[in-house]
Amino acid sequence: MTDVTVKQFATVVGIPVDRLLEQFAEAGIAVANAEAAITEKQKVDLLAHLRRSHGGQPAPGAAEPKKIILKRKTHSEIKMGGGTAGQVKTVSVEVRKKRTYVKRSLVEDESLRRRETAIQGEAIASSVVETSTLPPEAPAIAVIEMGASSGVEEPIRDELREIEEASRRQTTEEEARRQAEEEARRQAGEEARRQAEEEARRQAEEEARRQAEEEARRQAEEEARRR
Image: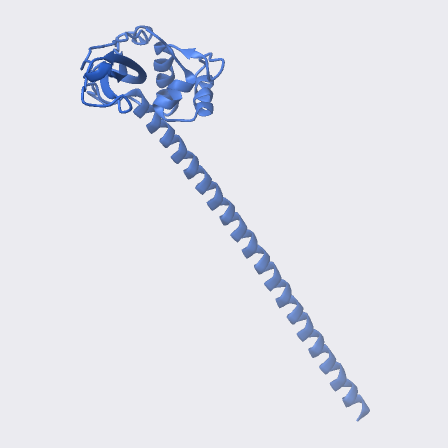
């Protein structure tokens, strides 16, 4: 069985390569770089780590196994003689390979559960189809498709995407909570400053009124003495 690189696996699961490398590092899985090959066990170990770190648990009665589907295409051309006046026809051949890697859980022991078997089914779905009426500049196309779906739902890439989305939602919620707390602190500070300014103004007005009353009383006493 051919292992895939981190870059190829990132394309399959639909997340950035840098983020996938970070996830491998957080899981304690040694991966050198984006071009490093990874095994099926490393993929399943990564998924188990992500589920644990996000509190994910298998749904009761959830069907095992899980799967990864890798698809590849190759193209080639075959020149074929035939037709009138020695006409040479070019037939394009497209080979599609689909590999399905299936995880089967061995429930009783955690270490045994991590032993995975990979099932690869490959079958020729169609053979070369020749179209004799096409001229050389418009070659016939033959498709050879290899592999068939195992019928297993919930591939690992969906699990990774759900976990990544949950992580993004958590980050968004934490940022919103942080901003709300900062806004509450700002408003509390504004209210405290407003109350302090109001108290200072009230005291200044009381002091001005007291001084005015003192001055009026002093003038009245002075006027009374002159009489």
